[in-house]
Image 1 (cartoon, rainbow, N blue to C red):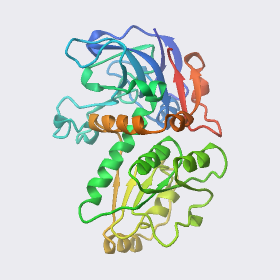
Image 2: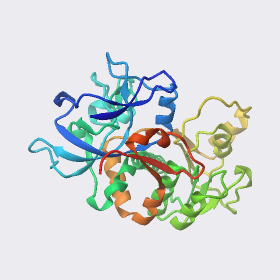
Image 3: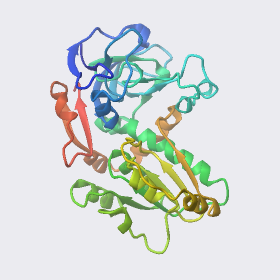
Image 4: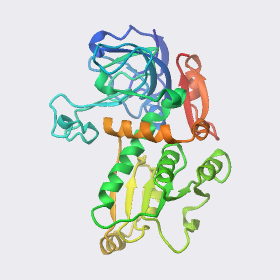
Length: 351
């Protein structure tokens, strides 16, 4: 079968090649892959900046945002041939740590977890893959090809889960959320804010293209240009979800919430930029206003299932517009080359 593979740590080593069919030891459920989403992590792995191959193997099958159709599943698994499914990316470590032992592998404490298409476990960018039923999440058939958005959506489902847990440390009635970054993660964060009945503001440096329109059609307020020019009126946001990973934007939102506000850092910085920060003033603001700042990455099964519900409630026409390009597998290199108006790019594997 065909698969997109890469030699982790070697820049520009990606290639489409024939690989063996996945063996039953990799999972009792056989899935025919329909589509794989592309994100910044994939681009970094192809650039040789990240990733780790399976033990004893030089090459790794790429792809962690999946959508497939079950071809065979064991009796009593809850899965049937024809079901649309998404594979859970992270698997618990074999020890396991205290978090992995209770299904919270997104909070693995010893770092021995594995991740499809990223760390020591083959990804989904192949014509077929195998997975255990516990790591396959059913997708509403009505979503169809939009189910490929489930993996990025689950990251935001986790972020919102933790935001609300932290916010409810005391009396909390959030009204306004600011999302920084209008890529797929930021737009899905905004979607979940709208579904919660909040006033949603989205900041991105772009002032033209599809992103401002997507935010406005969602019912949010779009702010382009410079973050310093963003004016939310008399009230600061109760919640900030930072999705850019850009150092100036991160610093720009810290301490910029209403008293008792919560900031979720969902973007990952490159580490290439350094800022001079008045830590004392930042500390004073956060402490005196009882603010909270936390980081969030990955997700467990509960978050995948929550995200599936959020996508099922969303306007499918709006979701469809998040996917700016669909590229066939044989032209995979086009999918990994960003275009100015890209939001989410998807590699179509099989129809």
